[in-house]
Length: 384
Image (cartoon, one colour):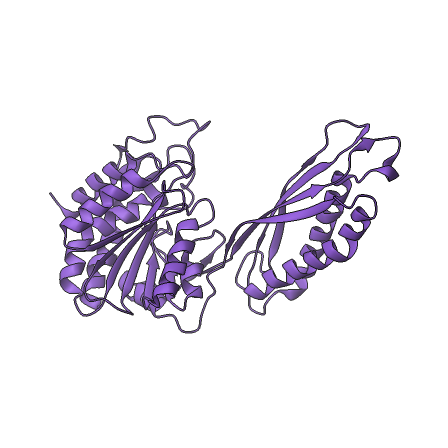
């Protein structure tokens, strides 16, 4: 059996674990831990507070700083209400394409890592070699955030990180961040005929959204010179505005779910400072003048920094050498790479499969893409 055939078989195993983000990933983590431990890796399984999710860190080579980290997330998006041709958690093949939930996003890369691990461990002996498989990337990179905090606590920092999200093996050196929030408004219910006697939560939520849109316009003037993103500035999107239940009742509850995609971290600070000032200096005083119990609360869902293109990036340069790429790219979708970069790790995104297939019904990856990834990993060992 060839290396590619073994990788396809391992991918089939991985697809059989229905690791939708709302559910546990412990079964697939257990499978990967057993496989990597049999190869001689030092295994650490780190659970989240619920005990139902975990990261896996499998390490070859010496202890300590430096070395290389290959990273992939184990969770997948839901399949509910999607028109799948066959069972999404039982991989099938047709015309060189491998179908199933997670084939390209991103269990294909994980399968390549598992099958390439013995070869890499044999070749890379002078520095740590980490295989990191995380939980809950699709719901805010929660596993990667926990991993970064663990590395900070232990004062450990790999030198390089390759995150194998589906890029069709293109070398990605930059993407925007993704900051997600849920803002809740508590007012005072009353009869619609006397609006001054109540605190209309929907009205204040609407004013809050208006301010967000105003800030969004101002962000265009902050576009960094030479920004390669599309659009080149930081964006804000309001995804949910809800509240109230009748036209003649002053609503006491409303909510706004919104996000921003920062080009640079300073833009995120700018947005948060502006919105905090508007809430504390304008909205809240007006609300509390009528009802002292009125309030506005913003809950952070996730704050995942972007991957900023850097003049010096050894991980990017390494992947260009391994893949033969003549240039690098930036992408609109987010990954865990920015979190690792925030720790001072040179990070790059490069992996098999197309993002156009991710999250879709009948998601697939080609054998050819898996082969290209295995070629990169084969060259990686000899290069290091």
